[in-house]
Image (cartoon, rainbow, N blue to C red; front, side, top):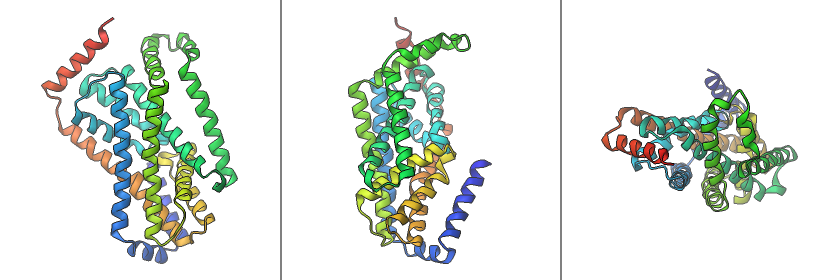
Length: 315
């Protein structure tokens, strides 16, 4: 209900702010070729993130059939509308239910996906450091500090003491397994590979914003478009609202206008890029969930799950 309300507020707010008639004209004149290019760039983002997902699974020796891996990954995109994309944890339950992968084994993959996404987005935002307004710079600085603390905590065993607390001692075995998996994925090589793939993925979506603005005849430098998209994404994540709604749109609109983009073009650009990135992802995710529900685990999947369980049962 909150998501529907926020979505309505965002769309009504954008149309009202940009003047309904002017915004309608901007959208009706928008070239289809630019829309297709932006959608292609958004899809490239998902492809690169899927490569990272597959790399992580392979690194932790988690075997998942290719089609099932693709569908589980895409299903997570349906949860892009949750605060900080935390709903993508649905993937660990899908892996357990469809393949038989223990949650403690797959959880580090999803957690490190989110962490390396944030690292990549922060790095992109820092590319245009001098172009960002002070409030946004403060958000980037806070996120950067939190990232440093989280990576340091994961890379060491200092955080393991929490597993001995009485309230969570019963789950200490699974939690330690997950912590060890995260430490492996936070090692220098996998961390660098994941961040590079993340940089490529989020560069594609920042490029999609630039393409949309070009289609609206609103010309800004690629560097500025990348930093605006990354910074707006961080603001939306920090807001902790579903899908970063309101925070992302508001900050993107403000930074575009600060960069000299006319109000109508800035509003249309914000609306289009959010449709192309956020809502396109949600649509793909819902389709993947539908297909997963239609596909029943076959003998091969069940055997894969059995082999996986046997692998983790070995001393």
